[in-house]
Amino acid sequence: MALRRIRLEGDPILRKKSRPVEEINERIKTLLDDMVETMNDADGVGLAAPQIGILRRVVVIDVGEGPIKMINPEIIEVEGSRIEIEGCLSIPNKAGTVERPERVKVKYLNEEGEEIILEGTGLLATAICHEVDHLDGILYTDKVIEYVDITAEDEEIEEE
Image (cartoon, rainbow, N blue to C red; front, side, top):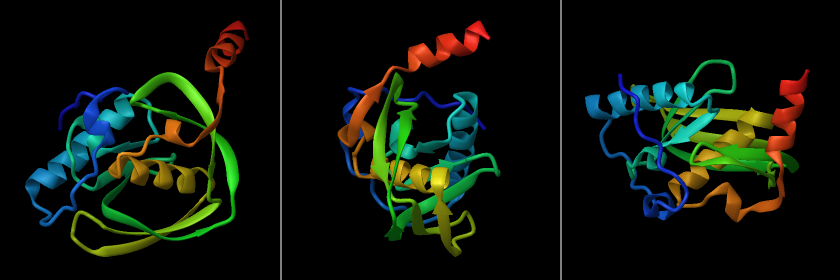
């Protein structure tokens, strides 16, 4: 496994649409492992392949229950609405409120090529939507309702 360089806002690759994975081979499995390692190293909740310069429909997510590796994810159902603060590893030191579905159902392939249907609510639903957006060249900043000052929150934590 290896750490990959996270592409930052302004990099044109972040605005491109990713291509589907046609074959799940060792390169794709290594990519998924590298993405999990890179996400964890950066203290992230999710990472999409374009964020490390790979235009393939691959994402990894970990909301605290272990990594979920998704190949060719497709959101097939959404329900409800919630507004939460989001950030992004490709847009450091920025955060903003975004409206996302409260519940989503996503269909994807796992590393063995098996089709999985996963239902997520709350943070998992948000992470799925955020990462699938990356695959279509959409950043959370395209959907921000209002930016929030995250430095003030950091200062409060340091003072305690």
